[in-house]
Image (cartoon, rainbow, N blue to C red; front, side):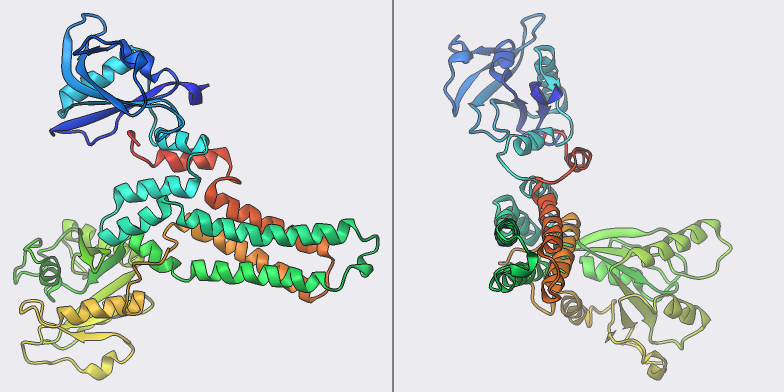
Length: 459
């Protein structure tokens, strides 16, 4: 019965600020708030009209003493965020005052909302589907304008409409198959025009899934960011590179090898793409226990990174430490950076021919950095970032589309091999089920709960 409780939570960030909002949602929302709200004009708020506001005070339910001066707004379901009756209390920002107002709503009969429960109710009440609900959290956590724009498109139903079109293609195919099977006693006597029409519908769905998935890897980067690890032996200029990319002195730079002993992580905005830059400790054998821990962390980050920037000191010949690091990143997507080009080159470039991407830079003099940024965009976005088209940015959605695509492929192959249409329908049904996982129509309750638990409490 918890789904029918009236819930309450703070919907703004906790801390000092001008205004904080406590959201109350459920069929008893107005009744609960009326117990702790005293209007300035002494009117009862139970007669409030939807989309109106009242000015007054939140009072202590026990002592009747005023707690804070507030404005409350009322949105009657189903025309509200949760599709339930919603009251929002706008009080003064601040940890103490905000928590005190929340405490009063709980004392008056509301239950503290679980993470993501407001959005979960919007989903369960049919106001939004699961892909739109997930986009709400993507909007909150967006690190760039492009990530925010992508999430906004999805929250407005762009992906839902595309999934709806795919469902329509596949449902039409199922209708054709059922018509052929139900109205034909012998499978051999099926209308010869039906299998080609079934195949056409499947190919239409298959091509549209391919179109949606085309930018899925780019979408994941737009949503989660590109993980970029700067690696190399000590004192080759890794921290100087981090500083020039961030345009601030984030890492300490000295001539002493091993200055960076821990992993430093920072974000930059690369033409709308959030890039998480990881400055690793110099990789080398060391007896220093603290530095050794940093080296182990560096190796872990190399494995996790989408892209490795291998920094070599071009003013020195390659040594065993360099060669060991080169070998460690050989199978990773990487860019070789020949640093300190402002000094005389002493590296034999013929030894580095295996690296497809090589750039000469001077982190100290800010040379070659723009070329590095262009190279990153070329490697992951073919040089141009599409900010207008819908992109699949959620890995869960991508996996569901992959399963739908695989089942469409199997169905097309079955039709071409003149196999029984009953078998084809099994593959089509499986593809529809996979698509339903994106919008939430075919998702198990446990997974739905897991998705919403990743939300913040007030949303």
